[in-house]
Length: 416
Image 1 (tube, rainbow, N blue to C red):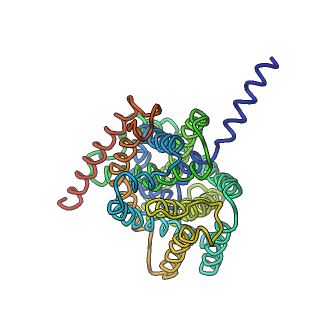
Image 2: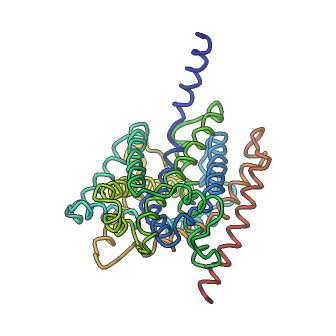
Image 3: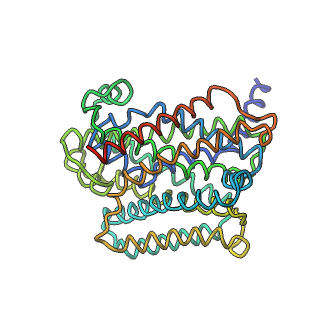
């Protein structure tokens, strides 16, 4: 018994040592933009909007697992490997497109934060400026370990959605039928439905997430001894993030979709569910939106800063002070300042871009998958840890399917 406990204790300590990159990256995929996407899709198509949830969970686990393995073995982030393997020119193209997509996500998160302040009847302009300035100071002054603890604590906000969904009194059997077996409540031939599925996929398996997890792992200093435990953590994160997305859809489906109420953002959803689930459920939904916005508004700009620094050879670590990591922190601050500046114009509804921004992110995934497969299967880069097997072929299949669906839905949007 004592020997068993020693072995179990050692295993538990090793597992706890790696916790952070997989769970934080995966759950942060459900930022304010993600909440808005799940909300808009569920209000329009109900639980059928979660029809890709199982393959999405597998894809998220496999892709982030590959990215983590590459970074652990090489000690380099995805951006750094792209620069060294494909050169600066391609790095510039990748970063420009990546920056535009990420800035759209940042705008979603700033707008989500604004909405949460409005829902709690706070002066949103002042609160928005103060919160963004506070986040900048926190990121610049705190080291990696302290920031990671804060990120993990912020994930607790997402459990507010669980209680909100329970208060919606869902039909559990029907929800499972629509999301896991076959949707019967909607027209599956609707081009808009497939557009929304790609958007949901694009906000769950994100391009920025693939860059962030590799950089975060390098910053954390994980080694090959941590490979197995990090894999467990990544799989747990993939399950957790899609559990939250399913729960958000559940909350919206049985308050808004069943009453044919369409919304454009999380703010409208929090208000709209009050008559059906009550004031408390609405407040919980708003609380979840606040936590999602705050986490996303920190993680997504950091992902851009990591990518910029790696693609162009600058210092990139949360342990650096402002002087040595100037470029890294300036890119972070620029994104927040621009996001807040645009959001201060009240006539601009950034959530209207939600599905389109996440659709664009989904369209970018096959390119990211190409880099992951190329690096992970290269013996020159990975040595004895080079990856072969069914996982790589699943990612290839996903890239082909995503490309075909993106092309078909784009043509449908243009000509139908």
